[in-house]
Each structure stands twice: as C-alpha cells, then as structure tokens.
Image (tube, rainbow, N blue to C red):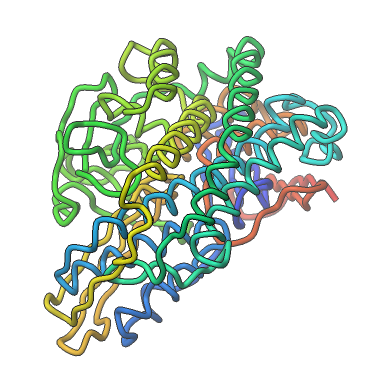
Length: 479
C-alpha cells in the first residue's frame, strides 16, 4: 500500500515548509517533495506603487536578506531612470552587498548548519542547535556570532540601520562614507579573517565523517549566476552565465535583461514556490528534473574562471580539487563555498576601502522616468535575485516579477531530499536522525522562505503516513 511520510515544519531554515515522503507499495521511497506553505503576494500588492518606493517595500520581503532585495530593486530603478550611478555609489553598494554576504553566510554556517556538521546528525535534537554548539564548541560559537555581528555592523555603519534600510536608492545611495566610518570598518577585518580560517579548518576536518552524505548530495545539473565581463566571481553586477555539470559554458555571459531567454517559471499545485528551469532544454518536466540548474555559492564558484582576490583564489583551487578540477557537484559543499565567499567579501571590502575616491560625496544621480521597464539583478547570498518592473509614464508600477534565489534552487532541493530519503527511509519507520538528514538536505541550500528563522530547541514536527484513500495510518510527532 502506497503511503506518505510528512515532515512538518522543516526546522532551522528561514521560513516555513514541510516535506512529504512518498512510499510505494513495497515501502520504498518513490519521491520526496518540499512544500513551501507561505503565500505573501508581494508581486501583486506592489502594483500601483511608485517605482522609487519599491526598495523600501521589497526589502521587507525578508528580515535576513533585506540588503539583497534593496539592491536588486534600486538597480531596477536605475534602469527605469536610465542613469549610470556615480562610481563611488557603486563601490559603496558593493561594500553593502559584501557585508550582507558576511552576515548571512555566517548565520547559515555557524547558527543553522554547524550543529549538524560539528555535533552530528544523530546528536540529541534538544541540543543540536546553536545552544548546543555554545556548550560543546564555545569559542567557535562566540566567533561565529561575532562574525555575523561584524557583517551587520558594516551595514549599520553605511546605512544607519542593520535591517530594512532606506540607504540604497534608485540613482545611487543617500549618504557618502567618511573617514571615521571607513576606519571603523577596516579595524574589524583582521578578526573576521581569523574566524573564517578557523571555520574552514573545522569544516575540512569534518569531511571524512560525511563521505556518505557528500555522495548522496552529488547529482548532475546546470549551474547559473553572474560573472564579471572577464569571467571572475561577481556578487553585485556582471553578466548572466550558464554552465553544464562539467563546467562547459552553455552561455558565457548574457545581459541581465535577457534572462527570459533562458529562464522560465513553472508551478505545482502543492507549493507556493515556483519552479524555474533552463528554458532552452525544453518543456518543464519535474519528474525528470529537466532544465534543473543550481544557483548560489556552489554555482558561483563553478561558473567563474577565478575569484580575483589572493586568499579566495587559493581556497578556490583547493575547493575545485573536490570535483573534476572545475566543478564541484555535491550540494553538501555549499557550506565550503559559503566560507570562501566570506573570505572573498572581506578581501574585496579591504581593497575597496583603500581606493582613493571612496570618500567622494557625489553618491547619487537624479532623473525621472526615462524607460518603462527596469530589471535589477544581483547575486544575493543564496543565489541570483531578479527584480523585473514595468511602469507607466508616471513611474507607477504596472507589473512585477520577482525570481528569488531559493526559487532557482527549488528543483535541486527536491532532487536532494529525494536522494536522501531513498537512502535512509525504508517503510514507515523514520528515526530522528533520518528526519534531520532530510532537513539538512534543504539547509545545505540555506533557503530563505520568509523572514523568520527556527533555530533553537525542538520545533514541532509532524510526520504522517497516509494511505491512498487519504486515511492517516500512522503519525509521528516531535512534541
């Protein structure tokens, strides 16, 4: 008799979701599905608002990544105004974005994933969280909290607030950097580098314990993200690139406003999260994962030709040795890629703060509506983020399309949890350790489903085994 095992809610991710594991007549897994159960309708209720209000509205999509939404939105506004922003404004926006990488990746690694990586999947769930990390690895936990705080503090120094800022605006930014603020940022960097090196050492030491997971998370897909015109690692601007599983370039670099040539969005009736896929590969077919591509830290390191900073390039070389020398295809290594990107962000912040014009006070260009369409694209910590706006001649929004990073990874996340479930779930008996392994398959992508984070304690978790006629034949509960 076919049954369904449900995990609800999924814990230690940003937002709310549940997982259904479908068993066939023999009790073996046929499929696993990630259900995103929140509906927020930002695209719809933005219609009718002035385009210049969009950064303030959309940065409230999430309390974890408001900076990323603000930057994608102001870049769409730049395009509607048809302006080239002052050079120093772009540099300040980039520092803003690199600081977001530091705080977001530090949260993902130390707060959400380190309990699994350092304590183990089968550790007591009552302490398999940041509090347990503090108990067993107090110095690691302290440094991780400090590192995230540094990223937030850099954002605060630039924008006067660490969350839901109104600093980045269409045309540039609201206020320049001064010498005091510049020096306050620079003094934080040495400690931050030290913490990243510690995290890299701990993560590499853990690989031997997770050989099985590394293999399960390994599957073929395309990779997508932004690169510099020279092919370097890019996190703010650049060209849209797609690469095959072995690193062969499918599209070496397309202008951002051509994204619809490559990306189409499908829907399923069991999730509010859309299913983007690579359009040139043909019609959407979720059962065969046709057109699946991955974005985010792993993808960015796979598609770029180089990072462009000394320490990150050295670590990138070591990273690629885990794969075929160009691409690393196990999603388990998203964790490693995040730490490399923190390293890169710290180096880039240091370099940019030393540039002669960084204290220039010309930080905003002014213009009205010069185009009726604007596309803003950035690399958010979790992956490529697209804001696509249409306006009327008065600058009022007539249409909005948002493709968030987690959406790009939707097919890959479903593939990952299916692989994990097929390995560990046999029949309707599911252990706590197995449930956590399924959840970690999602956490590897650091999905951002809303603006809440479940991190401490044992969250309510209900697993239901459902017969084909819809009757609940077995139920598991964490509380």
